[in-house]
Image 1 (cartoon, rainbow, N blue to C red):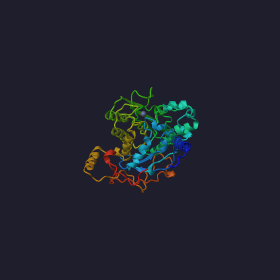
Image 2 (image 1 turned 90 degrees about the vertical axis):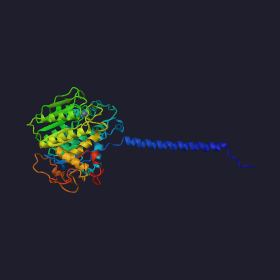
Image 3 (image 1 turned 30 degrees about the vertical axis):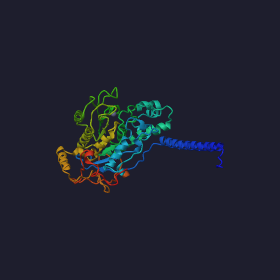
Image 4 (image 1 turned 60 degrees about the vertical axis):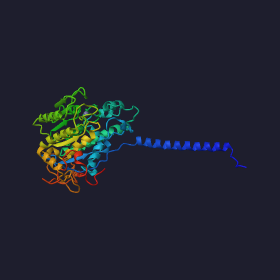
Length: 458
Ligand SMILES: [Zn+2]
């Protein structure tokens, strides 16, 4: 006799139980994945963690701007339930630039200053309380951001996720402005919201960080004249609105004609350029504009609103500037500032094309190396030496572990020294010191090896 078969009904029962277990397992996995996804999308955005960075010695500086600071916070990046990753613009450019400067060995993580977000009181220096209050209304905010803002969002979500990154960047510009007012090159890796007016936001600008910073300096006693050089592809109508009637602030805008904002507000000097303008046209126009700044202005502070939407391929403009052209533009403004013995506040403004971060990094590298001071013949000599394989030089004057002697008797002091902001790892720049300039060429040509400093990663 063969072995007795189990009744078929028992198999059916077991199969049913197995299917039930499998369904339960799948549901559990799906629930876990869903919970992780919901947690990731709704995670709170980063908040600024204020801390002091290092004041750097600018090795190649000539004429002025011999010290530099870089201000940055991860909180500058918008964080809107993960939807920011679907945005066609590169909204992570600030982070890419900061990481790129570290990866290239130019800076290390401890060099960056990080500021607290601008408070309501600080914002009220530039904007009316009514306007600031109205920003919790999704319809008002949608107009400022030129993008839909869901009506169901509560005040807390709007404040934290939409207004928070702007306030963080304004805080960065406020801190950078304090340093620039002391004659330094002060770079904020964000800000430049130059379309925001006292009672109106538009063009993706909610708060005007530059105006708020200038007014804060004024309140703290800074009385020197100020020159705003706006080279973003769009006219700096917000700056014009703030300072049109203020003779102590000269507002210059070099921009593409016929694009946002429309209509434009007249400033102290407007230079509209046709779409399609290339490096040569743009740089010649900038030189001419700077030569037209009144000789008696003698600014103590220059603010460069340095948008990268001038780059060819930007989605919002049709200028044809190359990354090398943008670098030359930024060096030209720094050169003018150094020659006039003023401080320079450099903010990034618009530009969200695919090459934006790379172009800013190229430009900032040149600024932090003080390359505006290089004479053309010296460039040629260095180029020949580099081609012959001369030993590469250190990337900058900043070497860890040594203090920097700071000049005393600056025209204005914000009390930063009392807070220890000058406790620096920067080395004093010695005249003619070997290794001061580092590789002067564009980053790609320099390579990463010679300029890299051990342990310089974030
Ligand atoms: Zn722009």
